Length: 206
Image (cartoon, rainbow, N blue to C red; front, side):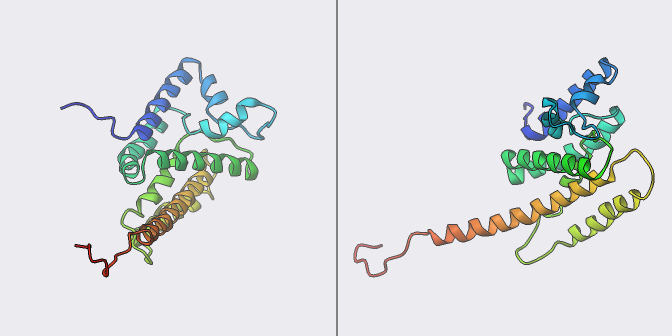
């Protein structure tokens, strides 16, 4: 038996984040703060701003922060990547990173660092695993109440955790889940509409 790089997007995400943590520690946090976090009041004349809108998900405050996020990402991420495909998984991660960084900068004066928004995106998205047409999964409702409800409550406390990014990540996961359901329905309808017509009157038909 040999090791299988079974979830390239999720595994690469984890490895890059670990590498960023090592580089950040070796430079006293300079690398993490400048290249892998968003700063209050984004400067659009700074070229690194456009990088940090996405790269902030690779930076973490410490190893405990990183392990906490990736213990969940490595648990459910490969299942989601297998279900939706690596390309779709990458797009969902990047879109979530962009939305959380832009809206956080628009509404708040604090920066962002870490993959917590991606964690919540995956948690909510995973509740759509057994989605049926015309039904809302009870697991989705429960997860919204438990996870996002807790984040809304936590937002009332003064701490260093960005509950807003968690909530946005969960919203993105919900939107992705419903969007994938609709795309699946469209694809199913298209597949049926292009099926070859039968010709019962063809004397050569078997």
